[in-house]
Amino acid sequence: MALAQQLIYTIEDIYALPEGKHAELIDGQIYDMAPPTKTHQKISGILFAEIHNYIRKNKGNCEVFSAPFAVFLNDDETNYFEPDITVICDPSKLDEEGCHGAPDWVIEILSPSTVRIDCGMKLFKYRSAGVKEYWTVNPKLRTVSVYDFEHDEKTEQYSFDDEIPVCIYEDLMIRISDLL
Image 1: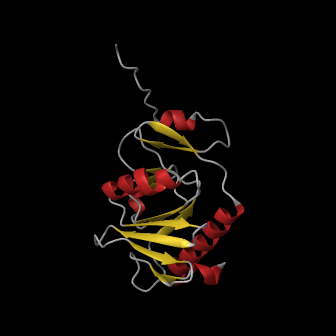
Image 2: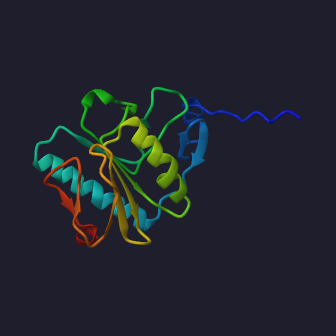
C-alpha cells in the first residue's frame, strides 16, 4: 500500500491567504494564528515600547518590529514566521518585505494554542538559523524563558517580577511587572 503524499506549502501559499488571515509556515506546513488576546497585546506593546525606547535613547543601530512582520528565516520557500517582537541589528537583512535571515532577538508571547510550536519547532528553527536571543513569554504563568544562543548559555527562567537581563544588550534589564 502506497503512503499518501504530504502537501508541501510555500510562501506563495501564505501570500494567497485571505486578507486578515495570519499564518506561519514551518518546513512547508501552514500553522494558522489565532487573533491575540488583550493580555497578549498589552505585553507585546509594553515590551515593544521598552525595547524601542532603549534603542532610541542609546542611538542604536538595531530596529524593533512587532507582529505582523515577516521573517524569512532561511533562504527557502517553505519557512515564513511572524514573531510577536523582532529585533534586527543588520540593516542589510531588511527590505520592504521584512527580514531576510536570522534576527538578533525574537520574542514570542505564548498562548495555549502556540506553546508546542513556540517552545518546540520555533525554538529549534531560531537556534539553527542563528538567532542570538529568544524569549518565550508565558502570560498565564507570568514567566519568561530566555535562551542565549549567542553565548550558548543555559536557558534561564524568570518571573514577571524579576529584572530580566537582555543578552544582546549588556545594560538593558526589563521587569515586566513594572510595565504592566
